[in-house]
Image 1: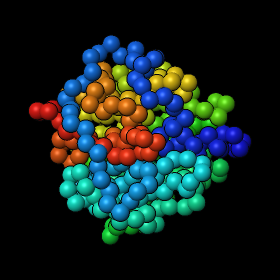
Image 2: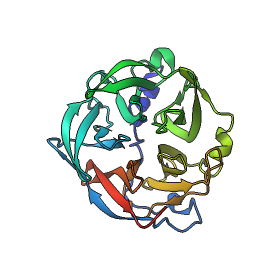
Image 3: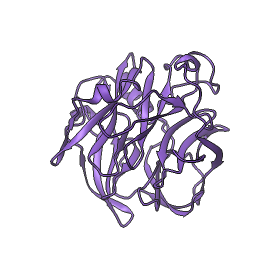
Image 4: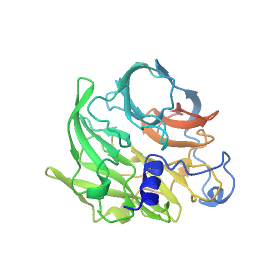
Length: 305
């Protein structure tokens, strides 16, 4: 793989930090003519006791006990997976790096189903496999049996899966297909993969399910509610738009239906990405750039869904 492309993958695979700007004006503001989503309010910063570094791509386990995240995605640091344990809804106690998961390559974007199967992104074998999605078993604060998630990647040069979310029942993966050109992502869309025994197969209904989600902009960082009916994701116009990414919300009436037209969540202001839904669906956690550092925030739902 050309060094320029490899460097771009390492830099962009977690959260597309090549996006500049801190406002919400410009092309991003015109992507949807729907009013903003006002279902959430009261953004509050989350504290990780014993941890002072950048915290990005949060994932709250389905029982709410653990917070997974990665440190800053930057070529100058080794991006690793980390874990913290819940003290209360806004406080977690840092446990440490996620034992068994990390290598000198980039590891990030953790997610886990109810059964304890963890999925994450790693560039450790991209040169040989053109794949970046790994899975492992989580127990006792560590992961074991780390291996590629078969059937997810398209295994084409220049195509990178830089985000992953698994449904609570472990049957569905929400993956991002990104196409790189000239060392930068020019396409990023959500794709559905469904379990087929011990592997996964891309769903033939993927395009239909995301017909209201995927656009010429870049869509990534999906988070799905426990019942599969509410989708959160990140969108930004392009790597050159000068707009900050926004987090959007879309709903549907039943599994298998397309998600409806998304609305951006107004309570999540600034440079925000990487949502994750609380087990009771009453809150959404996400990372935010604040004073040059990435930190985790939470918003809470107003009323019923």
